[in-house]
Amino acid sequence: MEESKHSIISKLFIDSVDNGTPIKVCAPMVRYSSLPFRHLVKLYRCDLTFTHMMLSDCFSKAQSARDADFQHCETDRPLIAQFAASDPEYFAAAARLISPFVDGVDLNCGCPQRWAIKEGIGACMCTNPKLISKIVSRCRQVNPELPVSVKIRILDSIEDTVALAQAIEDAGAAFISVHGRTIKERNVTPHFDYVKAIKNNVNIPVIHNGGVYSPDDIEPTLLKTGADGVMCAQGLLNNPALFAGYNETPLQCVQDWVNIAISYGTTFVTFKHHLVFMLENVLPKHEKKIFNNLSTIAAVLDYLDNNFDIRYQNKLPT
Image: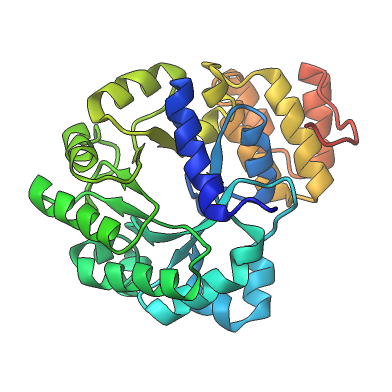
């Protein structure tokens, strides 16, 4: 009998407690949370990945949007599909369409970008717990087999933030991811006390997001928040092997990226952008200028071959 999606997600958290190891999650990232990068981080002890944020109305209306936004394969699991939505019906419809290919759906209530705020989606929704609850509840009604989670940012007060999290729990969410910064905050130290207050006042798992840039950041973050796991974005872009304990991207990880990206037909821009991140602490300044001026996949491969003995091996690492 096929394992239910609720069991798959629950088992992640149960095993985490039993093994004494936190859940390690790759955050949803526009342009970067693609299938090839999800494949890469899962080679290096990432437990759970998210797609980038997709627009539920576009996804539910058009096959062209679905084809452009979502690529997957059988080994791309466990996987959470993240949608932005302000309409319960569109979110539920998008969840129904993507359900066969993922292990859960997530409502984005954390995106602080101006265009998202203007559209009434993303982080601005955190001030409207009733709407979030309606979206989660409706999705659970339409897709009872599919876990629903929500990713939020904190509000100005701890009390309002805890009330938001409790409303999400009451609506039937399976877990919640909390970016420990407000909608206006960027590169500041996360408010760990807010995340801890949420964890102390809900009965569903809580994932902390923000401020994890190296393996050494994980344990202090968990001690400060009591969270069930950590979600990482920029730290994983710079070092996809972070969750495996590497302080800098190992060259084997770069080799794996070359094999994965080319095997999947990744565009040149995405292929190179990831390498720029990975090699940030490897290349000296003058070499960065040379690398940044490379304009074709062939030129990048020649550079990697000449400088690091890295070349495309025509195979997918497993």
